Length: 298
Image 1 (spheres, helix red, strand yellow):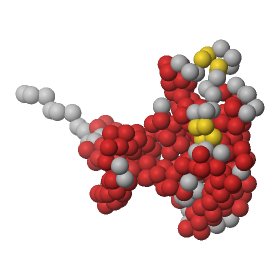
Image 2 (cartoon, rainbow, N blue to C red):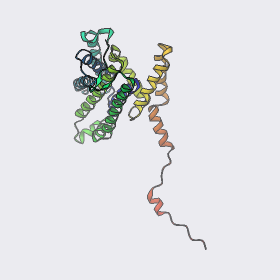
Image 3 (cartoon, rainbow, N blue to C red):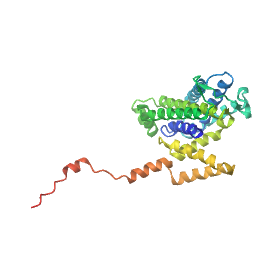
Image 4 (cartoon, rainbow, N blue to C red):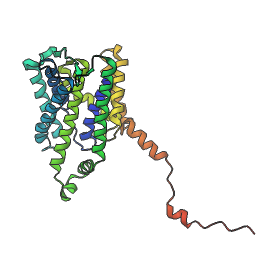
């Protein structure tokens, strides 16, 4: 379930980093803020899981709209620094606000009954619920990437002045993409709060933004399945290498360095490139039609 949640988070990040060329260093603010709002809504307000998740997702979307409206005015490293500054502001708000629990976090978040019928305290029901959320979010991203909106977003990332000359308001497209990415990140954060039953400062820390960047670039930025593969690889390493303690972070760094040096396109990106190189080129149809027939044997 943790792997699917982070896979959705990585796919949301890839929506702007891979297809919009907007690399954010502060995407953890959407994951963390949505988790806190969802946990507070479920624990204090007594909302059902679906309403609590909706509240967290809406909060992340509004935060993405406000921060994106200012951040997209810059590009490159300046855009990344602006998003990092916003993320640090949200982190210190979460640290000082009374309803977040401070350094202890918001603990004991109830899972409750989904739609008043399905008991999420049962592992099978909870797993099916997380799987449905992941598949729904992934299908939405897939449709967005293949839609005219996704093609315009790709055109903006390739050559923004040319897209502007064609009449597209590039700032509006980038803002919509950033807001959608924030909302999907908030969906992942809200689901994580219900699953783990805790919302902590770890989800809002800048290191979480670096971790999701690692997952995306390790799997293959700009590919549809790359962030999913990268998230599963990183989560698997965290689980199976947990006995090594702090050395897990060092191993993550070494793997990322090796990936950048040897697999510039990521795991999935290199596999796609290898498949294209190995696939034989089919002969043109006109050549096949113009080939003369063999002369009959005498």
